[in-house]
Image 1 (tube, helix red, strand yellow):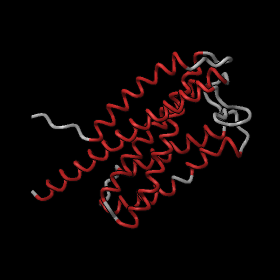
Image 2 (cartoon, helix red, strand yellow; image 1 turned 90 degrees about the vertical axis):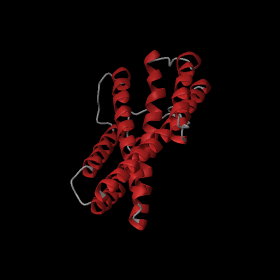
Image 3 (cartoon, one colour; image 1 turned 120 degrees about the horizontal axis):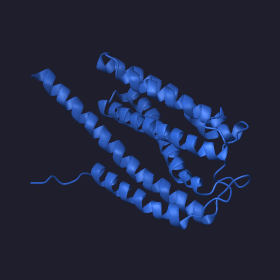
Length: 224
């Protein structure tokens, strides 16, 4: 008898379908940018990746605070799942940003404030994941990771505001001046952000469930 799909699987499937449907908006509905042309369409992937990566690290931050207060193993697994998802998405955001920068700025990389703070953020949470893999007593490791998850979040708001508080070549997307989007572009990017968000929630829940099952298996092995 086939097992009924759970919420995580349903969200992942519908998220993938939504992202696929958004490709029509990206490549047909949204007009091409005048100066960069077709390559600008990477923006519709780059922005959702970046935003949901930041959201992942916000989950790590809030979950780490809750773990310190309550010592709940399930919350620790949520932090681990969110950190893994965030590192993956922020890494892809850096890659797509590099490809976009080559066409926009003529270089693969520049030490722009937003790019630099994003790279620091990626290294910080990559280190967080390395820390989670160390051979330490479970509760001690979880507590240390919770503290690191809180401290590492200091760079996340800096990523968001860096282009506003320092001189930056990074484009302003929804700004009223020196930026902004055509209505078709704005609708397309909002749809892409929502579609990626649906996929992100499903992926996060699916990974957390895997980590919960891993803990149950380890507990059964210790009882044997």
